[in-house]
Amino acid sequence: MHALLLHGGGHGGWCWDAVRGHLADLGIDSSAPDLPGSGVDRTPRAGIVLDDYIAAAVDAVDRIDDDVTIVAHSIAGLTAPAVAVARPDQVAHVVFLAALVTRTGERGIDSIPEDRRPSYFTLAEASGENSFLPRFDAAWKRFFPSLPEGKAREVFEKLTPQPLGPYLQPNPAGVDALEALPVRRSYILLSDDRTFAPEQAREFAAVADCSPIERPGDHCWMLTDPKACAGEVAELMRPR
Image (tube, rainbow, N blue to C red; front, side, top):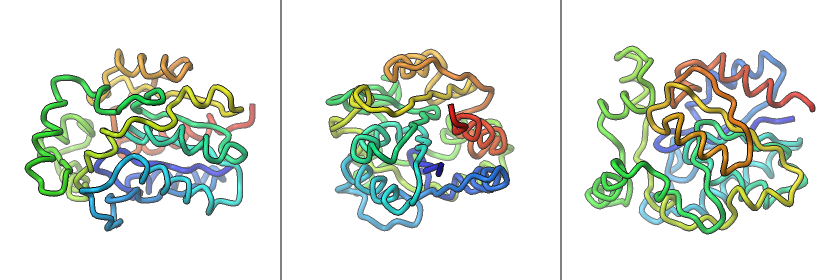
């Protein structure tokens, strides 16, 4: 079983580096692609939509010669179900990690807390490329508050603007599309998450029709406690 690690907004495959090292120590192969417009991928951000994320993730699955567990962090929760629908004979398990979860036809933006939603549009409009990136203080507070400031600044320097388009496209295959498939679903809720607070994360888990696994940690668990993150992923990948 191979772990396909899909990053969240503003991040890239780099955010999984330490987790991948711990998974390798546990004998688990993994990969962590840059989704379009993220990390080192140079796709113009202005035109990126959810379909582009799905196509990139399906392509990543096609490069794997094994069954796949998808670990979808944050906004990648929008992408993962459609990938499983596209490759039902290969994707065995979707793990939502502090992730946004929608049903078919729903938009991700409508599940963003209302107090933050307007800023997405304001920043994207001002960017000239329909994308947004919070200031350091906001990113530190929301994404990885347990990191000391110096380390948090190092991480922030690696972030890239997040395209708004994937949030706005109605999901072509939400989590409900998995109901007819033999695909396991798990949801990891992080008790110190300031992006999707535990109450909202429980709602996402309910949409995914699974009981949340609650662990201590903040939103970017793969960066703030990669060993624990890898251990939980490895445990979920064990044969049932």
